[in-house]
Length: 164
Length: 168
Image (cartoon, rainbow over all chains, first blue to last red; front, side, top):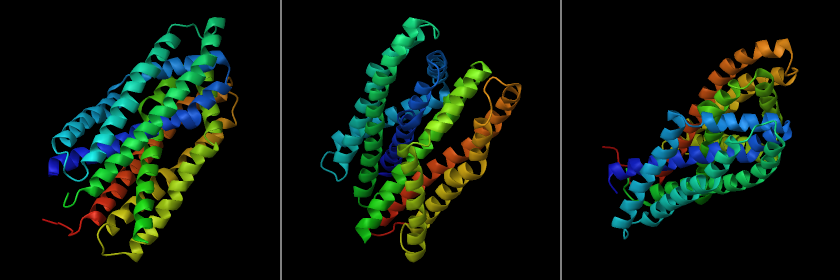
């Protein structure tokens, strides 16, 4: 494990922890809060959140961590016999599948559906009930996956003797 | 004992990372999203979040990490001079002063003030931009502090697990 790989693994651990916490906010209180206000207000707040999330700071954290995870994954496979490689592989897979893929396949299609309804329509209110339960279920999954990825990367750092 | 300290340090790092990310969500886009809505809608959404954050899951992580951070500070003084102790202390101070102290001293009073207002009142409409600016500024301090704590705790683990503290 050289210094560059060490730095990549360290940033993967911090990035996965940050993204895990970001989704944790939605799992632990944001969705509950939006579910308690009037449906029209909850829908327009979530629609606004789904537009505002598309910004450089979020993308840097979300996809930057993904890019580093790809590097970690490749190195893990190339140096399979070295200590810590298993944790690197686990961390990379957990983040790329559990967080990125779940977001793309689970949450984003629901966001697109929600973006098309009028907040004060009955169609909107109907979709909102469904959105609150399904989107949040996917969100629990990506929170746990991201947190587990962070834990794996920390273990990878600890397992590597002479990694400093 | 060593094993217990390692587990506690890992949990401190993960807890600090979770709290950093939760506040980062507000810094990166949630507050911006609420500011774009008509003021009463934005205010009522924020008021609802202020009420919902007092749920058991968030509070367990927030205060649990604070308790662990305090323990890490004590462990650092006991093990002073050993590898990792300095970073345990840094992580402890960052978490207790950053997300924990700033929340209690700065964000919480603003939350209490906003929670007492009627979303469609003139007073609330006037206070809302000021709330977002001040609350948002302190929120930057706490997410950066918490992320710094996560990095310090992780670094402490790395140093403590390295057989010979390699300083070139």
